[in-house]
Length: 576
Image 1 (cartoon, rainbow, N blue to C red):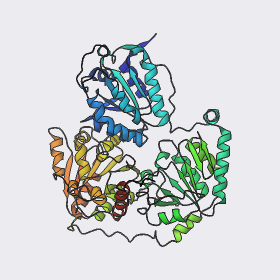
Image 2: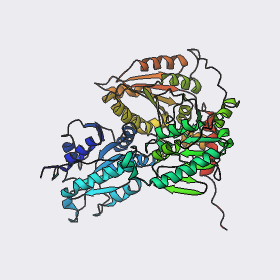
Image 3: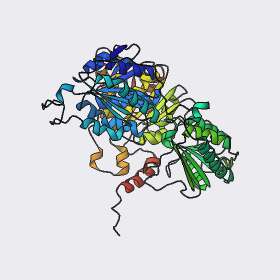
Image 4: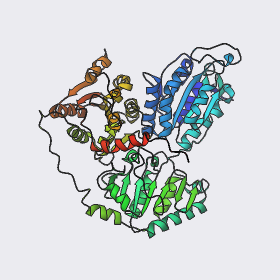
């Protein structure tokens, strides 16, 4: 029987699911594992500055690539990465999370190990990762490695969530059976033909699609809302198919921006309650039948529970495995297949789109007039200029904070991408995530990151790896001297911190062999010149520190922040 090593087996499977890179931070427990993984051709190791950044970078890579992998050391590395893996779970990014484990000889020895909490129970790391992964496996016997590795990877891809693989430190180079042919099914893949028939009940599908089609066809004014789970479950194209068959107005949740073309004639903007694009909330309220596909409604996306789509006779929810109507629920129906088959049964009804076009609310905004070169930089001017940087071969990353709202109102040309972490909402996510995304996309794609100064301070170290790996990336650090989103939620002295010279950091990160560019922009002209430089670069970091006033924030942040803060701080319910 052909054999390989456990580490080589794992790396081979990563290549077989299409990964070209994996992200890692070395530690004494995982060094042999990294050695074995480096022996697999065409799988490039990307080193990160810390484990949290590695997890975030892997999540960003997975957004672009469909899956990712992250390798860390036992306990101190894994627990640092936990936040990033939880974010990947919340955002439905299939990340193969790999941690080294203790030496198998130590479990029954009664001896205490370093990088532990000082007990002889070494299973707690796996226990802590169970809530934020779809499956966990611990490899304490080399013979079990193939089946456990295959199970973990298959589950992650099928469910579009992270998995957890722990490999004992002394088994990375131990022999195990060589990989055998296997087919990994991804959540994003739609089964067809006989294969599709076996993956769900066609009878249930026929009943669900007929029921929903009847409700949409009987409605006077139907409308569609695209949600963030369209992408992880492979339903973006099917949603567009349904939209074009129905002909109605189409809105997107903020974390689904880019999933429906913004230049499409049916697109009306993002739906976020009182902070929606102009006219969108009114259209959703006016519609008598809302179908939300892949949507998630949370305190954030409902503006502190102040907004909701109709919850009675006028609302249909289609999620990754269930379709819920006012009077029925159908389970185990793949989202993409449901939307596609539904498209064949609906009748065209453009009433909501026609009404939106005649409404005064969403009337075109006044033409943008560029500010004079010497004018002090404002948020509005900054956003207009950055928007002009976005083209069909670029992706805009926006960090938690006012960057969310600035990005939501930017117009995306067809082909452009948009990335936001609105479900997990961890500040600092975007810097390493944008790096991971840029690694996946390569130098022909331009990654543009807009991040506030407070969020940037959490994970700024990863800028050095943007330089090291020659990312084609432009980072705009919006320096408004404080946590503006927290000020909008609840003002206090804790929202302020030590200011940095952000542009000057690039020189430090360049050291003796880097060629990143750091620029400070305080006026409209300085930003204009900086973005001109950014457009001309390929494989070279350009970091622009854009300085604006602390209270120069979007009205959307103001409208959103107060209700969300009120929802978070509402008093306990009175006992009956």
